[in-house]
Amino acid sequence: MNTLTVVSHGLEEAAEQEIKSLTKAKTKIEEFLVLAQTTQENICLLAYKAQTIDYVGELLAEIPYKDEEDLLDQAKTAIKKVPWSDWVDKTTTFRVTGISCDTDLPREEMAAEIGALILEQNKKLEVNLSKPELNILLVLTKKKAYLAIDYAGKDLHKREYKIFPNPASLRGTIAAGLLHIAQWKEKEILLDPFSWSGEICIEAALRQTKTSINFYSQDKLAFKKLKPLQLDWKKWFSKHDKKTEVKKPNIFCYDAKMPNVTAAKKNAKIAGIHKAIKFSRFDVDWLDTKLEKKSVHKIITHPPEPSKFSNARDLKKRYLELFYQAAFILKPKGTLTIIQRDQTLIAEAAKEKGFAITLEKEVFSGKGKLQVKGYQKE
Image 1: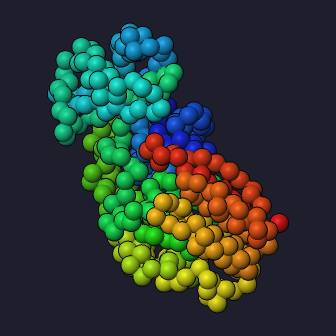
Image 2 (image 1 turned 30 degrees about the vertical axis):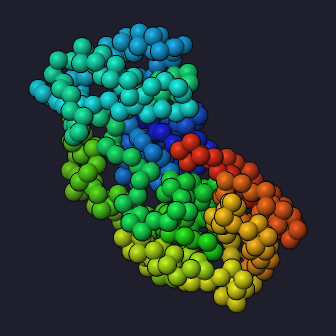
Image 3 (image 1 turned 90 degrees about the horizontal axis):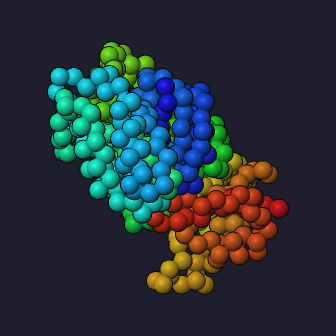
């Protein structure tokens, strides 16, 4: 079975790691996408538990194209080959959802055109744009288009626990992706000293406890209503909801501002994993009084960003303090992974404190570009 997963650009490798971990599937990375060969049940598992993907579905067609006209011609042929009887009953409502990945093609217009072609091939289908029984993903990239049956029925990057956000909040998928990029292992001590609304630590705790991001929204998942999937869903969810208890938290969620700590704690409680995280209002200057020398494996964080409203001199001072403290609390091979829009200033601070850059990546949040850099004491 071919599986299509759509991810933020820059998270393809992180998503591949997670897909292999959950399903042991054979995978292929393409820009914005990870394709995998696995079972329908495993596609359900990805829709339920994967933390790094935006959309997931069963691949119906892969369509190379040269231009818009060529795409529609190729799509017409591809749609004829789809076994629609597998998915459609006497009357089934559907819609086509367009997803644009770095292309100028008008996704809504193309979705409507593809929807019309699908209707031509199957008269049992009826359009329902609000609550369709069948949501068909049309993923548009520069050279290919993909059609897939949507197994989630929603944007998986959106987190229901994120009730108390912050303007500096990260997407849940990006926070989860950082854990893979930084190669954090679940028994390692993790610190986020600039936690904002807690996404990095919450995503770490979800992974550590094997708690689904969709635990409280099982009824909303599209795969439960798909025609080919006749499973005992109560038994299926019970099988995949066996959580791992954490007796002594090794995830530390710190912030200098109490409102941020409170927001992070509330979000974690909504996610159902607050007991797996140690929360504290703590300024970066005092980390060496809170944590033991050479005790932390990974620092993964999103420090305050340089902006026209911030004082560069004050920010540089905070960055220098961060690396000073990191040199004290990190284990000999411990790493500090940072995500920001521009890391010029923080890289200067790292160099002054004897830290070398060990990894560099770019990750996109929507159309916004974020830099991810890993630092280690030389």
